[in-house]
Amino acid sequence: MFILDAKDISSLESHLKSQGWILKEEKISQVSVPGEGNMNYVLRISTWDRSFIVKQSRAYVEKYPQVSAPADRVLMEGFFYQTTKADPLIASLTPQVIGIDPANNIMALEDLGLSSDFMFLYHPSRVLDISRLAELTDFLSCLHVNFQGISTRESFKNSAMRSLNHEHIFVYPFMENGFDLDRIQPGLQAAAADYKKDDVLKKEIDHLGQIYLSDGNYLLHGDFYPGSWLQTRQGIKIIDPEFCFYGPAEFDLGVMLAHLHLAGETEAVINFAIDRYSSSIQIDYNLLNQFVGIEIIRRLIGLAQLPLHKTLQEKIELLRFARTLIVSS
Image (tube, rainbow, N blue to C red):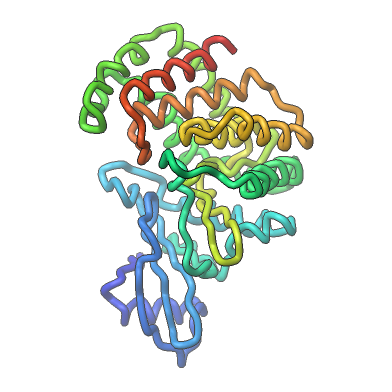
């Protein structure tokens, strides 16, 4: 198996030529890392005439090598892009695929240029522009409406990645022997203990987890949060759909809304997203609220932490709010 290595330019160049991604006479002028990756090994390849992105998925999470992950996940991401490019709006908001090397779990994508994700939203002084929120919401509703019942639905089961995500969303945050949350923020471990021992809450979460694992009617992005949204010179772009699958539409929308809550956006902003989305698709509001709640909880007491600028008391209040969404629904 060929392994991408930014330091071995000679082998990298030979492999890219063997895939037809660069011409025989082309030479790599520079190899760089386009940004901090979480799941995959990602490089920007520059020649004298152009640049593009290559990414490889391996049998572990790139940021956390101790965490196993399906090695072929980048192929699912490529399949998502290739399938959804049939829709003009989604095609305009996602990168174009240059090529896929299934034998080595490598994909080449267009270079979106200088860009930044939307993780800045968690800073208390930053807010999400309403026009950007409209684009994000329209992407979701377009994806969910226009890709129901397609012939490739069976190919989007993505069972291994769904199981991995299920573990991190519905199981790991509620394990009493999980990692020490006081390393994130002193006092968070004690605050989380009540939720790890809450049998009523955990029963609802187990049920919600089974809904997540069940097949649904809508093609989902699967990880629709600010780390998957890019601001580029060409406008907003959506990336990293490697957790995609056919499931309940409320999951994608719930994840987005949860992060608006975590970012401290106003109820007016959150209601704008709900109203805009619901004009296209009928929503199960109880299920939506539960997915919002579990995403908030897992981001506060699970492994996938965010750069939140919140006091311990603010996190405690968010945890209480999230529990209400789950148990009262």
